[in-house]
Image (cartoon, rainbow, N blue to C red; front, side, top):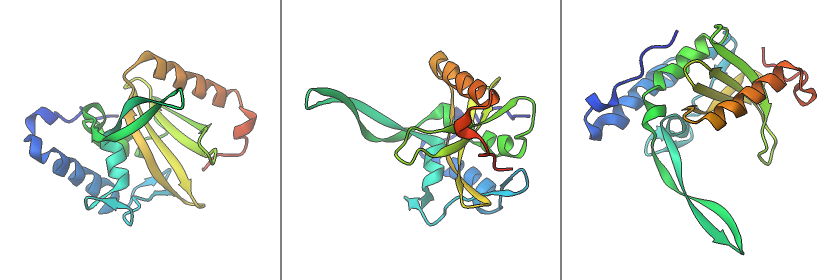
Amino acid sequence: MLSDPLDLSKIEATSIIDVLYQIFHRDFVATKTYLASQIYINPRSHRKDDDKELDFWHLTTKDEKEQVWENGKRTWRVTGRYPDFDRASRLEWVKQILTNHDHESVRLFYHQETNQKRDIRLYLWAHEADFVVILQKLGKSDSFLVTSFYISHEGKRRDFEKRFNNYCRGDAKLAGCGWF
């Protein structure tokens, strides 16, 4: 179901972002992508940084953080966003997972976030490939790509397994939250 990851080492370093953006633009801007033939994946082209949709940056880069102490408490401060090659090399997988969301290798589940709004997001987890795509609803028939990433450590895998199992057991907080 999934293509081989892109070999970014074969691309001139100064061209990597442009090559990746061509893929994002092809998959989400130049053509409309739908989940289950009914939920539009809105690239939110009105929200840009460096002439590229913010959603693109969330699919190809990650926050770099540093630990700081404020008022005697440890916290993390974001110092910038930098390329995440594990994530970026799998950019083509995002559309492949969306269009094959019902494939046996994709575990679909909803999860209520701990963010301020306590958003319910849809996770599409290609569990055998350790890659996840996260979507958030925008109205009745639109959604946006929150992020996607390669799962590189066992703790995150266990966390997703727990979320998936909670959803499958019928977590009461998620009753009736299905998009399709």
